[in-house]
Every structure is written in C-alpha cells, then in structure tokens.
Image (cartoon, rainbow, N blue to C red; front, side, top):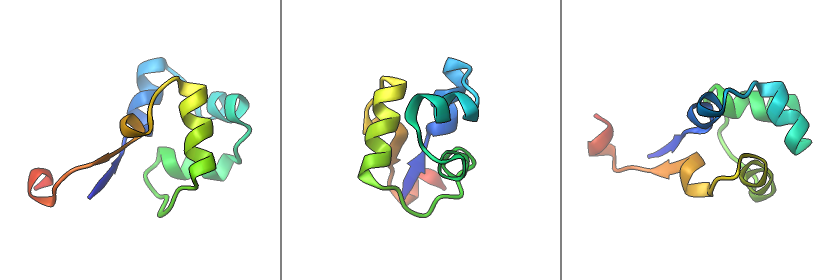
Length: 71
C-alpha cells in the first residue's frame, strides 16, 4: 500500500495549499487532491516539483508499507 505523507510534510513546515501552489506552479486541484489523500495517481513531474519546493525526497512524500503493517 502506498501512503501519501504530503499533508504531514506541509504541516511540519506550516505550509498552506496556496503556499505549495506558489512554490511549484502546480494546479490547485492537484495539490489539494494530494493533500487530502484523494489523488489516485501522481505524475513524475509533479513529484519532482513537490520535492524541489519542499526540499524532500519522493520517499518522504510517498511511502510503501506492507498491508499487514497498516492494519
């Protein structure tokens, strides 16, 4: 299972969705869907922009965990 941790990263940095939009140039819906965990897929370009803007790695934003660990 893939866990999306964008909201946690943004929370640590006290960033709003609009802050991330301004830093990345991504569409509001793209950032909002990722933030709220509604996104079903993510483009590599989107991940690249988020990682650059938030100074983090893809592994920090998206983490793979075994299903047994989640339950």
